[in-house]
Image (cartoon, rainbow, N blue to C red):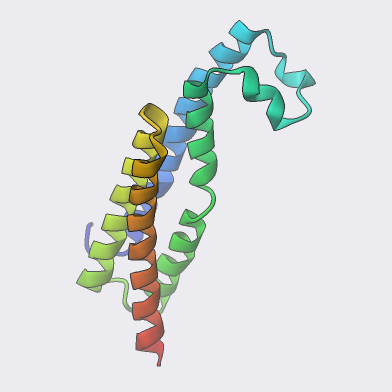
Length: 139
């Protein structure tokens, strides 16, 4: 099960859905408390009245639809080119997923940006390494 590059992909997708549930579990009650009617909202900025702790979770959910898209594409490239069982790539992929989950939890619970940036940067470095290895193998 853990010997495929696609398993970390599945886990990051599942984590994104966990964050989606967490976002709505906190956002809907906060919107009710703030007297916001979702049907009448026209701009995201109208949610700025919600507590920062609630907005942080939604912001992270959005972040999971940004850089991880590159990870998904790269993982499928690795799988399709026959390196999906490569232990180094799988290890790098798990590292990336673990750091993205850590980033989510840190952003949702603490959100001290300098530390969050370090976590994000470490995940980005793993993604860069994975990409560089694929390019080197291609050449």
